[in-house]
Amino acid sequence: MTRRSAHEPLAPQVARRIAAARTARRLSQEVLAERLGMATRNLQRIEGGSQNLTLGTIERIAAALATSPNSLLPAPSPGLVPTGPSGVPPHVVPVIALDAAAGLVRDARTVTVDNWWLLTDDTGPGTHFVAQVFGDSMEPLIPSGAYVLFRVSAGPTREGAVMLWQLREPSAPDDGGSFLVKRLAAHDERDDGTTWVTLASLNPTYPPETIVVDATDRLRAVARFVRVVG
Image 1 (cartoon, one colour):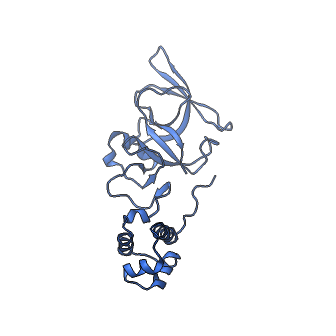
Image 2 (tube, helix red, strand yellow):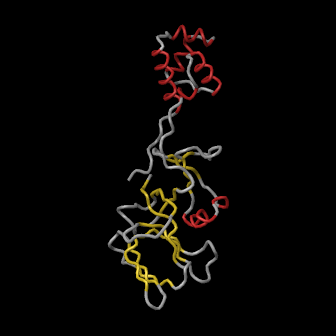
Image 3 (cartoon, rainbow, N blue to C red):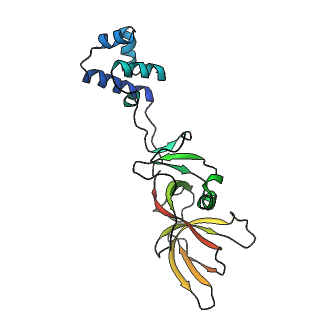
C-alpha cells in the first residue's frame, strides 16, 4: 500500500492557475505584465513555473486579475500537514502517538500533537484523531505502519467492532499500559463479577486473546477504528 505520493512542487501549480485566470479574463501576457509593472518575459517565466513566487507577488498578481490570492493557490492534498495550523480549521485532525490516546480522551490540552492530518470529508477535531499503527495482526484491514483515523469511543462497544484498547496492569501509571488495536470478539459478564473479554486479530496467524477484567479500568475501549487514511 502506498503511504503517500510525492507532491508536485507549488510553483507549477500556481503557474497554471495564474495562466488560466488570465486566459479566462481574455488578457494577453503583455497586458497583465504591464499591469504588474514587469517585463513580459518575467511573466512568461512565472506562468511557465520556472520562477519561485513570494506571497507578495501572488497578492499583486491576484489584485491585477481582480481575484483573491487563495484562488491562485491549490487546495491542500489529503495527508500530513507539515506544521500545526494556527487554530484548527475544519477537516484537520491531530496526529498523536497511540499511547497518548487515553490522555486525549480525558484532557486534550495535555496531549502532545505530533502533526496534523488533512481529510477530504467534514470530519473535524474534537472527536477524531489519527495515529500510526505498527504490527501485522490486523492485516489486511490495517497494514503495518498505516496511518489510521479513530473516533473517540462513546457508549458501549458492540461485538465485532474494531477498537483501540488500553490494557492496564495494577502497577501501570494512569496513562500507562499496553495499547492495541483489536476486534471485540466476545464479551461475557460472569456471576462472580468478572467480565471475560475476547479480543481477536484479523490476521489468522494470531490467536484470540481472552482477558479477565476484574477492575473497571483494567481494559478500556479508547477509540473506534474509522478507516485507514495513509
